[in-house]
Image 1: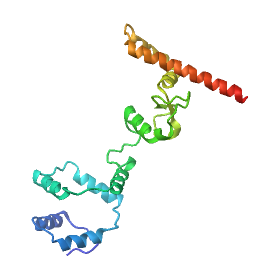
Image 2 (image 1 turned 90 degrees about the horizontal axis):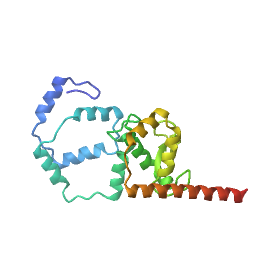
Image 3 (image 1 turned 90 degrees about the vertical axis):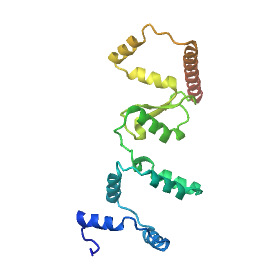
Image 4 (image 1 turned 30 degrees about the vertical axis):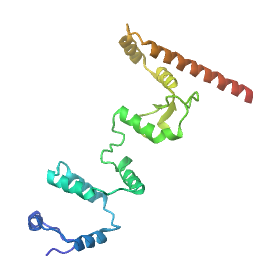
Length: 208
């Protein structure tokens, strides 16, 4: 019988596994195991080992059915739901990749994380179509981003765009015609931008 701390060989592990196949634990034993494990926090190393060991594993139809039956009629409380959400948010999520993500995914994360505190355009004060604009480098820290309306966002990129990129965009749009609805929205956006700029200038003059 191996003692606590002893390393078990793969052969012994296989024997133990084979010996326990088909065995069913009593409710009393299950309860004892549950109580013994309450409050225990699994180490990051063990979590990673479990994750790797379960990659590619698929539950049989029978197992899926058992799980489904076991959870039928059970309701998760809002508090429990929030705990599950927090346990799988950000760096704790299995799909977390840090800054090694595509541009669209990073934009979505920044908008979702910081947008609540930034409901107005930081340039003109508009509250319509606010999105994150990268001003330094594509990374998650807040100092790399500004929240701008669509018009100010476009103006920012236009002012920092290289001549080569400008030429590519210009060539790709040659001969294309915008729908009337899109033209109207662009005109309204520009008017809104200049009106907000005028209001800001007037307020500055009043303060001076």
